Image 1 (spheres, rainbow, N blue to C red):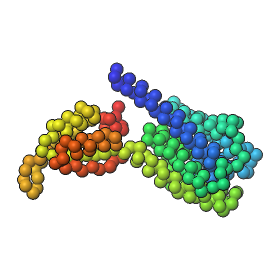
Image 2 (cartoon, rainbow, N blue to C red):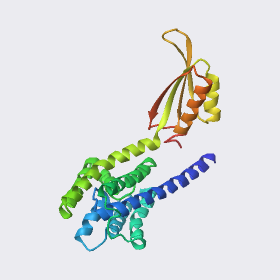
Image 3 (cartoon, rainbow, N blue to C red):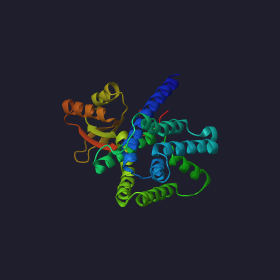
Image 4 (cartoon, one colour):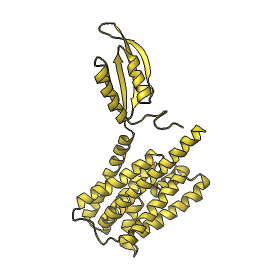
Length: 288
């Protein structure tokens, strides 16, 4: 029963995060990518290039392509096709079209293309990082990747990268060299921003505490912070005195509280702190 309640709350949290992240992605695409013709990959990049060649807006083309890919996903995978991906794809597909109706854009927001490129990279990349971190995706070319993975032995990462490069080259031909170069910078920076964002979202602090009196510290970790700890005995190499080593992993705010507590109450304790973004277990990722 408790497990079901936990899962229900987790589902609500995830869909709230999906909605917020989708809104952020739509803002980045509609207000910064579309008006500047920044075509660094994905369905939005294809839409920008095609809008130059056919009499439809990028928002409309983006909607049509995403819906086609979504239907294709259901045809190929049936009921096993992800509900999360479907929800996000619908938000990201209809979002730009809705904004186009209520807030039409006839050009870039500013006269600073570099500034707008930064927002065009960071906002969608941040949203993608949130999706990946919660085990979902924004659909689009990710659906193509899922289909390729099922039916072929193609290196998906390489295939998608080359398709993104082709979109950048097309942008350079259809628009101009400046737009193509901006798009290339966006393509190269996008993956870096996604990786860095995921690491920061998951960042935790791994504590190794060496002390003589472990009980008060362990009580603070377990009772005040609500986290677990591992305790074992060791011997100092220099004085051959018995020491106790406490291992624990905490979120950033909890880490600050533990450091403050130890410095104030156990100044003789030795603390080593390591950053980690891949913690799997109870209280962290990957625990059901």
